[in-house]
Image 1 (spheres, rainbow, N blue to C red):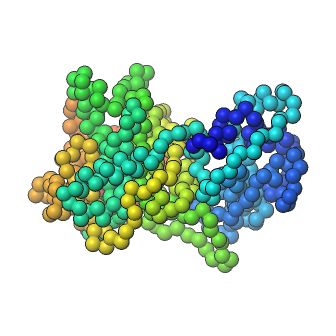
Image 2: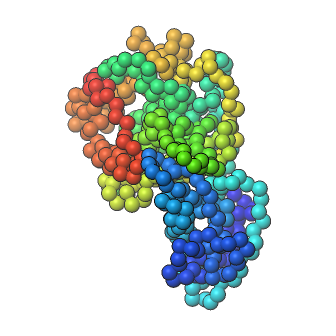
Length: 479
């Protein structure tokens, strides 16, 4: 951001948080949550705070009220309560906790230098009701470049199959930034789940939603990058995005490498909740099972990425094709897991909070009934697209890439296990080759399974429901 928001980052004038902490009463009462209109006493800086009715997230049962505090146009975490007074008070406390964490070093200097000067009035430009806090974190990345390069890459991939441009509604893509240059490394589209009888051979795709498909394509890209590292060829090792951490000998991303996830539309579920909602008396708001599933899949995918690159933060970039803000996504991805969970996680695991921003859509949304069940996937290094029927979980006859007579997707569990075994051989990790089944191979990562169990437990304890349990037989196959 530039212009009107620069004063917040670089001005030597104290921030609102500093003034708030300096002038706040020692024991503020609940009545100071919202002040009457026109009330301007300096000793009650909370008069700059407004409250807004918002949506209760998760499986919260009972007659709860929900409010979120709005300070200088920024919405903070939602506070719940059995009545309006309690919910407003909780919302104010949540906002206050975040505000008082800002600019602590400067705050100590101000406290010893007398009364704070009055900050200059910033020039206010028209903005959406909800402003993502990424703008206030000094990040000047031009996210619009990401949607443009995603569009160029997808257009090139479907140039010989233009009818599949209609699949762009759900497009999701991972972009790698290296030395200031962006390149698309994984693409996925799709909106369906497998609808037939379970097959225990690992050669069926059970979930072909765009974000899931793009994530599995990203894992294929990671496998290739790890093989470059294990090639022992200096030139090829230089091309790999991975290096080893000297202290732990674990893999991490090389310096100055960033990963972005572009989504042409918000994922299904609570991420699509609007920021401005009205609560109707005598009505109950609830989440459907598919909304909980989409949340759980997103969280699991984030953990899996953390396993591969524990020091990295995956930035999420959403287009504005069918949304005007990202509040629902912010809540679903960033506000449901507290930082305190980090202390309970195994070593090298932590709670990551991705940066989220809106960008122009790569593609406008359009009606797509003919290809609605079709899912496309591609990873850097693939010669062509793979086209999968989401309902059957198999490759279509018209797919440019075909795996063989089984028509199994290159993203299926059997294909992933095959790549895992290949990498284990190259890395000379003989112990990893002892797994008799796909499930046994997954269980070899004890720290990952521990982190996943802790996350499941945390979500359930905080009212977000139980983790979706799939049939265990789908992982009991061997190669």
